[in-house]
Image (cartoon, rainbow, N blue to C red; front, side, top):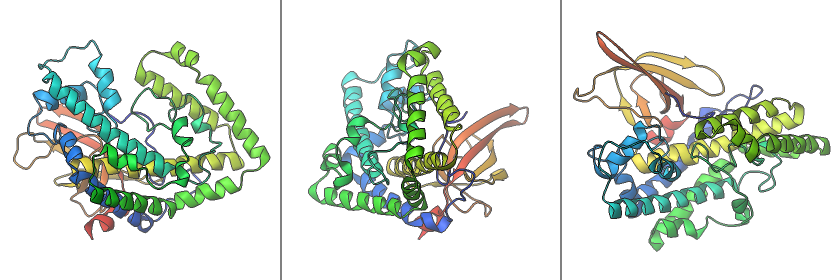
Length: 388
């Protein structure tokens, strides 16, 4: 079991760039956590979060039961709590029968409305943070061509970029007041929300990923821009609706095809254009990881939990720092914590001091019991940022 798509993350900067030092990320993690604390206290967010299976006291009936069945059916309910509404809508229309009775219609409708307001506020926040990226809104990146994973609005696997967002002049504005309106904030909470969102933006603007994209943008010559334009046109043609429809009607297969085609075309670039696309991926990946993946966990589920009795820790060096570990499955044993995709944890082992976000798992059974093998992304600098 793994997360769909290509998990761009902190420090995924290409072969010629070393990851920023752990220290460099500390201000960003502090700012993200401070913003999450504001969100987590808001009544609207609390009503939304309370029904999610990981937070609810039971997962077998009502809204938590329905969401748990969707999770078991392949929906990313737990992994992406702030971008689940499209998944819920898709799975609600699927012919696969649910084993549990549906939630009361009015209760379900009310919760979906709350979830939509929370998700809209989140996507507006991400859009505003993206508007701080060097070169916004006129990016020549092929990753933003029509039909790519970042522009095709078919699934929640990616936080898509929309033309409407880039046409709003967000780069000239403070965080939009509609964020607070959607979250039903009080005037005092609205001020705190704006201040802490701006703090996240400032931390992003001071990151090495931002500096790299700024330098790559400044280095673009007319020839380089022409190569990027040609790549965009090729991507758009290869990922037209007709081509995608001919490939598959399955959402996951369509998404994976978009990823593969884009990767193939980006691999043909070299020199300045290649550096630009790599720098764009790094900056966009930083926003996605910090302001959505990690922020969503902190805002909806709270701080990381500590996991003990892990075995066979395996560190994988590289620009994307991964760690693997094994646990015996002791469901029902006092103190045993179930782990879920997307969850952020502390490993009770000196080998890994920073928090880990879980992105993949395998399970095995034998005569002695069961084991689970997890893979996670290490979030550099989080120990200092969240323990101070």
